[in-house]
Picture 1 (tube, rainbow, N blue to C red):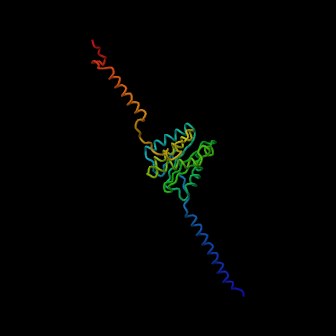
Picture 2: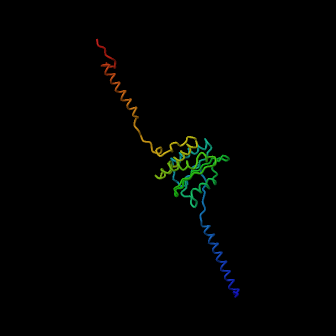
Picture 3: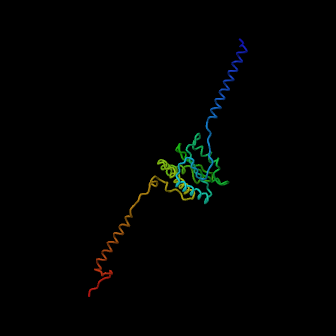
Length: 227
């Protein structure tokens, strides 16, 4: 049985309207999703989260500038309150590319990203530094040098410790102090070595014995002769 032409046209119009509505809804949802932002660098140290104190800032500026001058390695340090909508692991890769970190033709750029809200630390290295600063060493520096300070709210101190550790590696000094948990303990003050103490006591005893054997002295400490 044939359908009336008018009914067919009405149903087609409703179907078209539904498709248009769905398309607009999807477009609106996509447009409403925030895009990641990549701020422009203001130098090698970029504290966009505002967590580094003045003293730590001065120390970091000096270290990063000296590293670039002496080894031509561009080491950018970035703090962000959040990297949303991207995860820090993806954001640091995109930021590294956006900024073009590293000397042209050498691929010796290095990025340290600290995401405050996500509570994560990430490194991104150029191809020229991948063998010098592998992922395992990066994780150990973050875990042992930086995170303990971050847990105390000392972001500047943690970042400074991390930068110093990385620079030690880059300069070929190595990070032997990172091997094992005992090396991470704060050195305690110790008294004089036991051997030194024994030596001093022995010397005093010998001196007293010699004086006793030499007999009484005059005013100038010279030996008295009896007539």
